[in-house]
Structure formats: structure tokens, C-alpha cells
Image 1 (cartoon, helix red, strand yellow):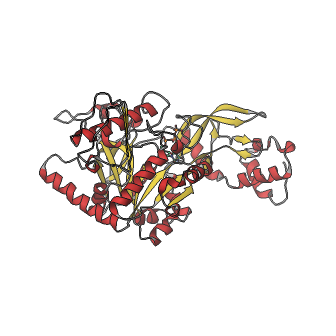
Image 2: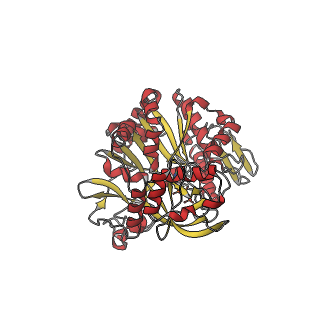
Image 3: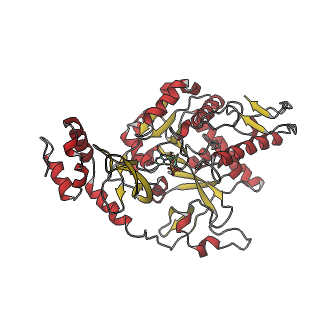
Length: 459
Ligand code: UTP
């Protein structure tokens, strides 16, 4: 057994756990590196690792005794429209009072996009090449202007992209936001494992870790001191969305209003699924009236294809990862022994095995934020329009890619102009509307003249 002054306990533990291969480069590294490896190992929760590995090697058991969850549909008649109007009023009042902040989860690795840098820094818009972070920042700026209040922006990063995210904002003067009102904090990283349950080295003296999933955001809010800060500022509502959905309505008074009127702890937006096995989570009610999500891959085929008498899908509400969280609820669930389950993803991992990086098969473990839904007593699911709110940037090309998302954003902007009766010359191929100009059709003046050219940017 190796030894190092002051670290006997952790060294013993590593051997007991049969993970001593992590000392493979022990003789080749200096004392500083030895110490940093041991510090890294000190932060490993071996009990949790063993539990995860054990769970990972068995199929997840999902109780199939569930039914579809109800959701508030987009208004179909004057009565429903009146409810939306009332919700809007309530939401506007809360925003104006400074009760709301925006929260982007941006700690993911964005491996499918393969961009060299934080996904949020990806130059996204078709004409001005604004980054995703710029798009969101301008949405917050515009909402702040509309409601006459400075809306704070929270960003969760991870070890791999925190510094670069900070620099992206600094280099761009926070895109006009007040730096004092932008809060970045990191989520936890947890060790990945080989398929046989072994820790993986990322270098001679460090373990390979991955960010612990967007579900890590709830505990990160608490651990970073952010929850406390929000309370001190009188903010009790968090508008949560993902860094990869540039057309999200970042601050939506109607959504916030429904959340408040229903005393909800978590509210979620849902889209009506386009087809039975669309790759979105399904909102369901488990026995005991607990709300939850069943992933598309776990929804049995007979349930996925089940229809209502009018031909619509029985399981029709799909999750788009847009939520309102009540600060009190997050405080409550994170106060004691709080833990969301881990989900397993089998991925290629860059391991440092034989003196150079090498791709191996491994397990990454992540928590999902929607696993907090069953912990709620009160919640709201609100339908949103796919065209106006869901354009994920996941892949380099094809489905849910930069191109498809850009196209959806342009289609939405074109629709806004048409809705306002603004003529678009045939020559116009590419349209970009700055969030500083409009967040929805109603923000556009009807007398705007669109020039007769192929690219049109409105700001
Ligand atoms: P995805 O599930 O799409 O993962 O994240 P990803 O890491 O961004 O991308 P791939 O799978 O490697 O291609 C959905 C949202 O959750 C955030 C992401 O930043 C994105 O906004 N997320 C994901 C985190 O904040 N932390 C995580 O650990 C994982």
C-alpha cells in the first residue's frame, strides 16, 4: 500500500474499495500532484458510488400504474382567455414587485453540439451571430424595461465551463445587464465509472468527473448561498430554463400568474406531443396523486399510442424543461437529507490510462430536475405553443440542431410580423428580430416597414 503523511485514512479506504488502480502513476508524480490526487479522492462518496453502480447494473423499475397528467390548455374560448388574462395580470404584478428572477442551467457538457466552449457562448443568431447567452440577456433586459424593474439573472455553470462563461460575459460587458445582478455559481461534479464500476483517471493526478445533471441545480442554489440571497432580495419565484432553448419566453407573466394563483411549488410548461413517441418526457400522475415524468423511452408502446375519443393522444403533455420554482419549496426540500435519484448514461469517456487520453466506455450519472416534481403537493402544468417556445439546440446537424433551431426562430419572427399585418417583401430570406425590439408579436409597431432585401435585422 502507498503512504503519504496526513492521508492514511483515505488511502486505506481506496484500497478497501478496490480502487487502488487510481495510484497507477504514483511513482511518476511529485508530492504536489500526489496531494492533489488524494484531495480529489477525499471528495469521493464511495457509499454513493457503490449504490449508483449497483442501481446502474439493473434496469430501472418504473411503476406502470400511472395515468396522464391534466394540464391547462391554451385558451380555446372567451372564458379560458379571461383566465389567461387574469393570470397575466397577477404575473405582471409579481414581476413589477421584484419577486421574480431568471435562471439558466448551463452546466452541461454540450457534447452533441461539439462546440469548443460553453454552449451558451455559441454564436447562434442568423445575422448578428449573437450568442445564446446574449439572446437570453437581451430578453431579461427587455423584460426589465417593460416591467420597470431590474430582473436578476442566475446562471448555473460547472467546473468545465465556469471560467469561460464568466469571461464571455465580461468580454461583452454583460450584454448591457448590470454585472451586480448576474449571479454565476457552479454545480457539483461527480466521478464517472467504467462499466465495471471502477473510478477513471482524467490525468495522472485527477479523477474523471461529470457535472451532476440539471437536477444538481436545486442543491447548487442552496450550497452557493443563492437561495439565501434571493430571500434577502425579496425574490420568491425562479423562472427556470435551459441554455439550449433560445426561443423560450424567459419571463412569462401568464406562467408566473398561474403559478401564483394555484399556490404552486413547481410549475411546468408542456407542449402537446406531435406524435406518440416524440422524444420528450411525458407528464404523468403516479399512484398517490404524485406528479412525475416518464421518459419517452420508458413509456410502453401501448400507452404511447393510446388515443382519446377525439383522436388526440392519451399521453399528450410533453416536457419542455421550462419551470417556475418557488424559493420556499426549494428551501424546504433541500433543508435536510435531500437527494434526487441518479440516472445513468452510457457514454464514451476520455480516460488517462496509459500515459495518453483514450476513449473508453463508461457510465456518467446525472440527476434530473423533474425528479423534484413528485415532491410537490401543488403544481401547475401549462400548455405552451411549440412554435413560440421550443427550439432546442442539441446536435450539430439534423434534428434539434443549430440549423433547425435557427429556422424555428426565423419562422416565429416571420409569424410575429404577419400577425401585426406587416408586409414582408418576397426578397426577404433571413429575418432576425432583436429581443430588445420585441419578445412577442404585440411588442412590434404595426407601421414597421420591412426593407426589400434578403437579410433583415430589426432592433
Ligand atoms: P442536456 O441533457 O442536453 O445535456 O442538457 P448537455 O450536457 O447540455 O448536452 P450533451 O448531452 O452533452 O450533448 C439540458 C440542459 O441542462 C443543462 C445543460 O446545460 C442544458 O441547459 N445541464 C445538463 C446542466 O446544467 N448540468 C448538467 O450536468 C447537465
